[in-house]
Length: 284
Image 1: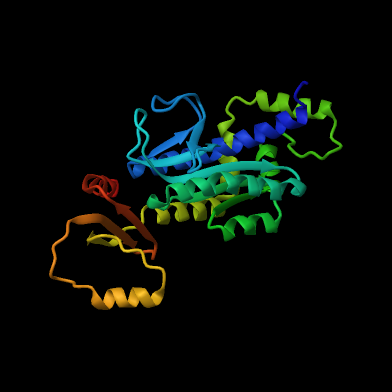
Image 2 (image 1 turned 90 degrees about the vertical axis):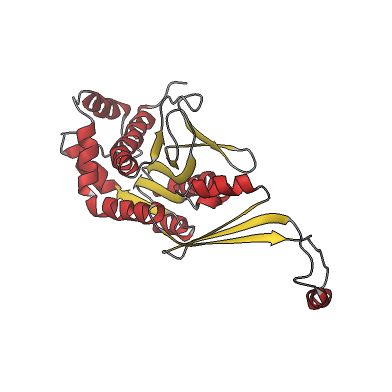
């Protein structure tokens, strides 16, 4: 079945969102020695999609991932997962919000050790309920209302407005006008300029999340054998009778707690000393 022209035009707007945000993310990554993975070929991964696997080995394709220690040849530690989406009608917005959270939250949970930033770049018609739902799950939301998208296209003499009754011939005219533009990135720049306040706020949240500084690192080398006790009474009895300093026992594991100036806290546990060192090296 041939792709409808309405769907094709919607895809154009969706691609425009990525085109608009990408230079800002790239500049941020370059300034802070991070790696921005985006759609396209990369030596470190197969294909052109930015794909990551969650803790249940489910694959999720994303628009942008920022990595610490990454390069064209090496996959780094993810410190930001960002997805973009366009929806013309509010009736589709809640489902899209749920789709995004079901993709990103499992990845954030798997890589909780790096406490990654999770963000969404949305445009079109999204209900306040859909936006609030994402924000309640700690997503940073960059939202461009439908009217601002129309304004950005209008500056280049393209009427991007449409409804469910818009004819295919009218969509063909819009698509032809878009294809005739000599520099489509100018529309992307205009869209970002119209929504500059929202863009700046989003980038500040990204910066605060990734560039927060470590206030202290607490390391607890744990010695001795694990004791599993079924009741609080027995546990109290165990601690009361435990000899604290009479026996030397080898290290069982290293508990590491990283506390940031923002109040964020990351905890990790390692049996192997080299693994613990490797974990801390990613924060240098």
